[in-house]
Length: 308
Image 1 (cartoon, rainbow, N blue to C red):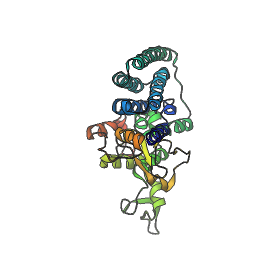
Image 2: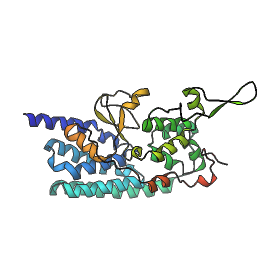
Image 3: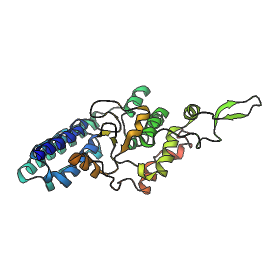
Image 4: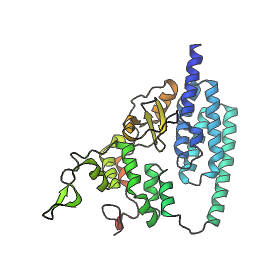
């Protein structure tokens, strides 16, 4: 009885990861594939048959959705998932997964060719681009900024980077960092006045530059997986959404209750027993970090990412 209850809770925790729904979003598809692949490789054989069936269904769903994902990293993620399926699944299920992957990859190539043939030149309105870019994870946002000048300008919007800063590092601390900075106001003698409060500091802060500096200086916050652990309801959430398993939106000062997922092994620990083990984090190396911020337009950019 106790074993069945634990198996039931593991299934519930896995479903709370929302991997099936994440597969339907291009920007989350690679992350979801990586998580499914890791679970297959590390613990598939230890799981209950019901949970194994759900994981297999998710893997098959990933392969069937591959034609809709016209991105190289999506194909790469699906390929890695297929390798994990080959290693972990029994013969009959392995054959099913391999068949779906092959069909999905072929359909992806065909759709890619048609898309390239029919593609024309058009520009989305700036406000629409901001809404779309607001759905991207940090790395995708940086990559989007290297596409063209318009996208670089939109991807540098202060509101977008203020949001990412708070997700990664919490509220901005201005008492020390902003000492000696100025907000543009002048006194009776014509001299600039220093920033006096946190709100004035944040209003004149360039958030992308603040994020870049904090990201380089804090290696333990270089998140690869787009996931966080919500201490309020004890579940793993997507950082772009900030909604817990009960649909509650975590915002404002409550963001401090979200701890980043720094290793896929933490996802496995959560599914197995609901714990959030403090495993060694798997983050970008310094070389990868500096390469991340070196986009094709940096030679034409000032220190705040504006074209000079």
